[in-house]
Length: 423
Ligand code: GLU
Image 1 (cartoon, rainbow, N blue to C red):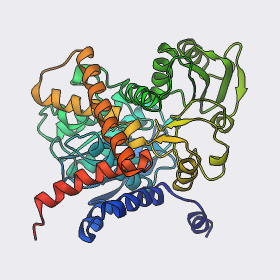
Image 2: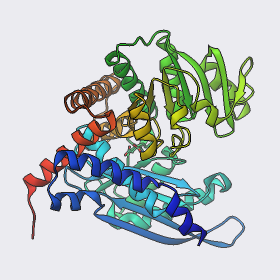
Image 3: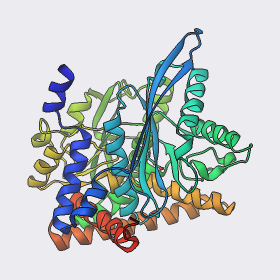
């Protein structure tokens, strides 16, 4: 009962993803059969499996893998481990991945996977057994030419290495590096993959500032989430002369009007496990950080941070969505009406999947690029995607989010029309 009530009042990520799709599909006047095809994923797999825990007891876990459409190429997207993972969330994220890959011009469709679990409460051995068993469960629908997983929330190169090893064992031990991206370097990972999401978001921020006729040097930024992506964009902005006035992690935030040095904050966090308590900073909550007066706000933590409750209080000039789905559809409209530019997740955090694409290309060629080459190509991909979106935003007089969806959906629709229907 309470679950149903919650579903009626809360806007889920899936509602938002469908709303953003419909809005763009209306503008594109997308024909009905294509609208039906692209609004929903092609495949949703639910797996239920047992794991032997360290205490000898057997516990069951539920996992998912959802694939949008392999129109442009194999589907692509991460795997997350989180207690709140659900089929609806994974579906929404697979749709976001589809538009993300398309807006970037990558030859991929979208996908996402997840396991409902709390990795923070599991031992290394339990996480390994869970990862290997989940990989075997989704093995029938993944592969280097079919669907290529990658890291996402609470997964990383260690999980990717276990997945490659497990699936390779299913193929007579044949090493299959192109099966997942975000692997350790020694197993065919790419230089620059670990910093790619934050680095890509930084390139987007630079282009946005330029197009808004502002200056990066001396501008102010607040970053919510000081993990892999948030710390990189904070470092890059700081190194380019921007002032980082606030940072946060899951335990809370810190603020300093004269600016924080994120490199020093990282050293502090490595010793203390949190940014909170960093010398000469003031404590601030994750919610209050969002409402600070600044030029750039980068939500780089989890979804649903900018909602109808706080959208009227946001004072930033622009929002760079480093996390997936940080803005609900209502908040998105409110921010647009208030003249706040929002670079949507499907563009702002696409650096990760773009370097995943580079990794996959390198694995297929068994020829590996230098860090400089990866960084240069990432900048080229981010800059040209940003330009496509900015031009659409100016031409159609729509928000950057709608413009991104228009670019992305139009490309997939054109490919689907060219392929026609096999029936
Ligand atoms: N999980 C990342 C994302 O949401 C990366 C996906 C990938 O590299 O395939 O974009």
